[in-house]
Length: 266
Ligand SMILES: NC(=O)c1ccc[n+]([C@@H]2O[C@H](COP(=O)([O-])OP(=O)(O)OC[C@H]3O[C@@H](n4cnc5c(N)ncnc54)[C@H](O)[C@@H]3O)[C@@H](O)[C@H]2O)c1
Image (cartoon, rainbow, N blue to C red; front, top):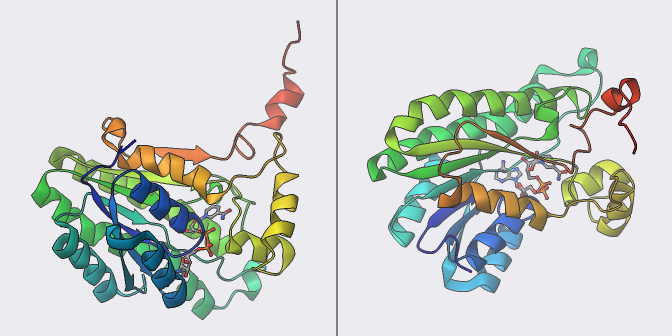
């Protein structure tokens, strides 16, 4: 299948984890991708593996100049910017709010929220001039609910959703869509670091994460890439300002409701 035939995309944080999964799936569906990441070794290795359909550009998403360079590289090398995936992320500062230093707050917000502002801001005019485009911003289930992540992470992810909904209104008349992907706990080095303390312990992390899912299997980056593929393709033409939670209902189906109002059995 080639659901993204002829399209070109920038994927920030595209060298590893969910972003890597998105790049792999987009390319398999006929797209060309700029892998925009600070991890030069992983980004170059992925681009070498995937070949001419990809281009790696060292990009720090906290730098507007870097974001603009990634977008320019997509247009000059692949002819357009059809899809902008603002996905790069970190866990950032953790701990009680009273012990959170302002510097750490600002550093975390820069990677998780300012980056999405910069990516959205600079992708939009290019897409408006084309008369089409899909901006996909990665938030989290921690963007729709408190208590699932550290304070600043949760703050930033709620901000990603607010920014996306707001810009969706401005973008709509020009044929540009802005939607949000909210992954549930997904296997990656980010979650491996969180649940095992070792970002390289993917097997251990997968076991622990899977035990939290009713179906006994945690999602992998490829599962998030399926959702991103829909949001990038013309199949989601009527989806704008939407928040797509992809967590198998883990955080978002209320078990409280089930307790108060038991599901009737036949
Ligand atoms: N894995 C999960 O369970 C989960 C759940 C919800 C949301 N998310 C979000 O998904 C996104 C991807 O996370 P992941 O799990 O794939 O993590 P990951 O650590 O596997 O990958 C993150 C990528 O972002 C890159 N990156 C980090 N800082 C950057 C910067 N300043 N500039 C450019 N690139 C940078 C890293 O080099 C890496 O390639 C993040 O926004 C994260 O918050 C992840």
